[in-house]
Image (cartoon, rainbow, N blue to C red):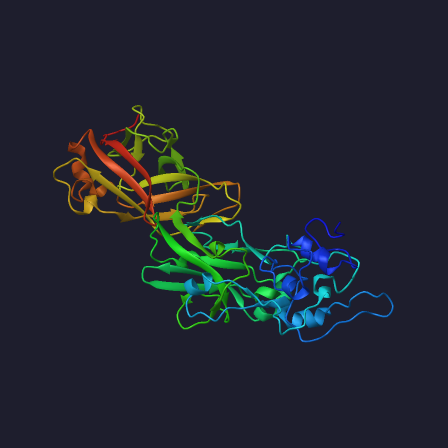
Length: 445
């Protein structure tokens, strides 16, 4: 009965017949046939390699002397790289080779044993490849502003063991960099890790600017390739003119796939309030309850006369100041784990009414001004910490002045009209509402 069991060859005094039986071969098999067996796991640390030295028996123990670690490293543990590729796709379709001893090479039973401790486990039939594809999702989502980088651990480095290989053992790729390559239209681009793969470079940082063909609010799906590149490219560049090799994966199917890139509104569903800016107190006052996405029927009026201090319109309309400005307050909820920043620019508003006399200007998007959360008159961005809530104040200048041909005065004759109000941020629509609009000659009390 064989003294070699399970998935490992761990007996220092294992015979040729024992190892032949381990592989399911005839116990009468010769050593050179066993060392050339096609079913040997190439990712095992201890396995037959082509190395021109005869290792005999030690006088002290009578055990065969294994190759040293330096000798195994000298032949990359029997692994070989395929020929270099000029494209990522070609490299991703290849795999590492394994050079077994031939009839003209020394064949050593000690190659199946552990060089460091001959009495411990040697050949491991279940050894894993040094790298696995990482758990990164097939989708990447970039906010339309704020943080614009996503760092992904694209592969998982398998921990080295006494019986399995690690990335740092593969001296034949010690000068290579992990590369993420993707095809955008007819061009393939590349970004690499900042460190070589054997020095821990298994993460790559991708930026929203790496995907310029994805518009704000849009998405696109790309074919990608994971491979090795002999040169470092931490900024996006074209993949042509470079040298590529495959990664040490169990299967070439891990080396390619598709990924969808989306650029979205980064905050949770917004909440909107409409109100006015009263210069006497330099603060925002709101005369209407909170509204959320999908609201309809909000009313406005333009103040045509004086209003008593503290007096609210008895008809529950929001008052718009005499210049036709519209002020809104946007509630921002950041449920992500990253700081988000609402920018000072990029917000536009549009009012399209049902009046036939509307001018072209009335139906155009107008740039808005973003104020900080304390109601000051200076414009600047608003930072929202992870898991926090902040308010952004937005002024739509002369918004209702363009309601009817640039003439605020004529609004007194246009009561009860309806229009569509939309708010966009960097091209993404965040509010669309059907609004009732009226003027109201309020004289106060």
